[in-house]
Image (cartoon, rainbow, N blue to C red):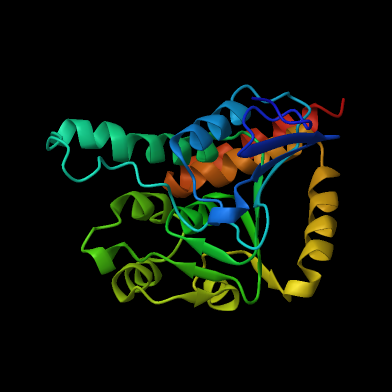
Length: 248
């Protein structure tokens, strides 16, 4: 199933605009709940990016960014699945999606409006940059059903401070876009009426960078925090020299 913009699944629209790859969750009637096929389509779109792609933009069609995930758990009345089967059905698809976003070699940008619930919160946080409407809504509500949201926590644990993560998960409270920015979950917020204008300007700024410089920034952000100070300095020098050498 291909849409007119080159997407691989009607529920996920993939569009190349110059040096920017746009990925849009496209099931607005259910708040863009992510299904297993949608996750696979996103992973496929991120695999083997053209070297000239400088930015990946992730967003949701309609009123919401992403209201969660289509439940992958077996229906009640089915034979009880084993722990390994649940890992395959529930955990691995989400973790594979999160890993694919983290491994994208160029900067990723989430544009968030409306609800970003559960997986939606994870997707926004996983992107290197997240621009959100001030009145958007972030929440990790799984503990309301006594389900530990460890998969979402795995996506957030190196993105937000531990106190913010604990509050978000254990209190189950909704955060506005402004509160999410204060908690380190998103990069910047804008009034809803100006979100598209701000997104357009930010995309233009990012896309103006050279591929080698943008990829160097992404590599440093991905790897330096786990390095000791000496290794981080050496890595910084290596990336800077490599990027500068591309000019000659």
